[in-house]
Image (cartoon, rainbow, N blue to C red):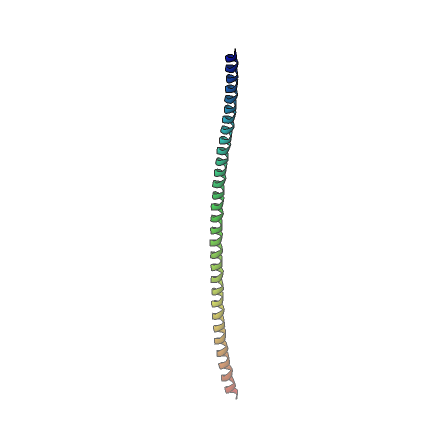
Length: 111
C-alpha cells in the first residue's frame, strides 16, 4: 500500500512536471513566434524607410539639377542682356561722337 501511495505521488509529480514543461514550452514557442513576427515587421519597416530615403534622395537630386539649370539659364540671360546693353551703349557713344563731329563741322561753317 505504501508502494502504491508512493507510485501515485510520483505519477502525480510527473504529471505536474509534464504540465509545467508543456506550459513553458508553449510560452517559449509563443515568445519565439512573437519575436519572429517583430523581426519581420522591423525588416519590412527598414526596407520601407530605405525605399522612402532613396525616393527622397532622388527627388532632391532632381530638384538640385533643376535649380542648377534654372540658375545657369538666368545667368546666361543676364550675360546676354549685359552684352546687348554694352552694344547699345557702344552704338549710342558712336552716334554721340558722330553728332558732336557734325556740330563742330556746322559751327565751323557758320563761324
